[in-house]
Every structure is written in structure tokens, then in C-alpha cells.
Length: 158
Image 1 (spheres, rainbow, N blue to C red):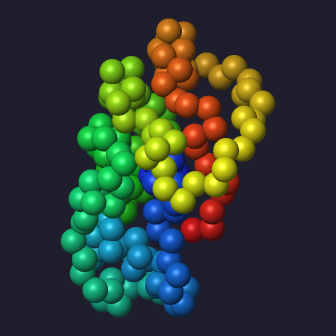
Image 2 (cartoon, rainbow, N blue to C red):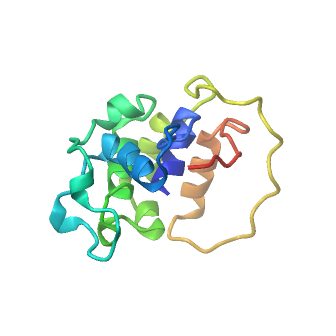
């Protein structure tokens, strides 16, 4: 979720490793941004060990995805944690302050904030109604704040 959320703002993959090296290179790309986890957080049953990596410190989201407002950066921090059991679930993310109308309206990506975006694609058909905890008015406000065709609907390899 976090990678897609960041990509909606920047218009490009968050962890796009162009280096050769497979799993190790991809993990190093991730660690350059979220920081190298301490050994105690490392999974015990893996062939890749923490000693194989340079120790990186976490980068500020304002530097990595400058298009994001502060409430979006806080949500991104909750979605991109090394330990899966500490990450916010999709349900928890939807309850975040970011989705409150006052915060969402000033941090939603707009066409002018997206970089390297392809030309707008036609809107997909509407999704079936899914029950959630937002009121009808809140859903209407959020949908009005998101410009049509402003988000890249393509899927990028990570």
C-alpha cells in the first residue's frame, strides 16, 4: 500500500532499483530510504543477513516525496515499516487523519504535482459499493477533491 500511495504523489515507483543484484539490490534500495533495520528486527529464517548491508538512516519523506503534505507523510510512515506486524493495515490506513476532509483536500496529488506522468487515461468504471466507516458526505468530499485522470493507473515493476 505504501509504495502505491507514494507513487500516486510522485508519479514514479518509490523503490525502483535499476541495479543488478536481485533481492539484495532491491533490499538495499529500500534501506536507503526507510533505513536499515536493526538485527533484532531481521527475520531469522533467511539467506540474506543484515551484515551484508550498509547501515542507512531513514530519509525524511519530505525529501523523498516532496509532493506530499505532512498528513500524507505521516500515513506513509505508518505504511512503510520493515516489520510487517507493525505496518498499518488497509483498514487502519482508511481511518487515518489523512482521509479527513480538511487534511485530504490540501494533500491530494494534482496534475501539476505529478512528475513523469503519462497522458491521462479514461476513468475506469465505478467500483461496486463497498461498506466502510466513512459517511456518505465524507466519501463525496473525498471524491470531489481528487481530479479525474490525475493518477497514473499503470502498474510498475518493483
